[in-house]
Length: 400
Image (cartoon, rainbow, N blue to C red; front, top):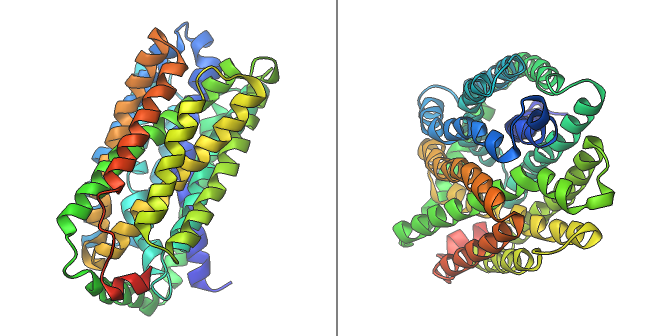
């Protein structure tokens, strides 16, 4: 394996860990802390909000530092910092302590997206960014899936604190290996891809950039609500809806893992399509499927609920690489981390706002009302996508 391929593998593992760490608490809250700390699910999950606020708020400083200092250096800080904070979270004795520790974790988690995604784009070849971003996205989704599975296993066999400690140790070790790797990366590999990517962006001259970026930010915010609501709440949804099928924390974790893992395949399909077809056409199809399957979910239980959950997660995860590809093609290399930071500030602000929304809706009406709301959100995404330009300049089209 060449050093560049090994570097891409580390970027993928980083994406896995980023989403893994941010969702461990979701399963812990749903399956064990409610009884251990004597709090309802709706009372407990708002303590995750500080972490998701930090996840969004610190994306811009992380992107600025990456552009001004070093993207590779910031990735090393990510691996070591998020691992240390995960181990700190295991020491929490009260919900207040948990909220502080999750905030610290969110600060380091904020580094990955404005730093790791631009590095993935710079390492792509031939101007085809769809598949590299899709593959990287699959790893992120597997991190989402593994959080529920591994946490469920730890709860049943060791305890919830180990679910934070063991991944933290692994992340710190990976960070040290990553430092060894970037020291050995040839300087030419670190700069040539960025220059090549910057040249490819010239084809977007004349495109109504403000309009496109406004649509990207709007669909990013709405997509963040969809993504967070589904990934955070799914373990609790399965705990309630699978009835006799979910007899333990481990089984709930397995169901969530299987759904997230299958849904991750949608990103490969979408990445393939983005390299060959108009991003607008692909986006319309994905947004339409989201609206349909969320509308079908209310009232379903057992196998029917599991099947439709797979379907709406396929559509929800399928949207993720589309906005990243659009931003990667529009933003020049020297500004790319900061542009991605702005995109992810919007995403993770929506994620943070979704936590209290989930708690409020679940406490008052249950999850059926949440699915109805998500169907409406998906329709707004579709309307926004329909306002994207039908055509783009020939040089940009070639890149697609």
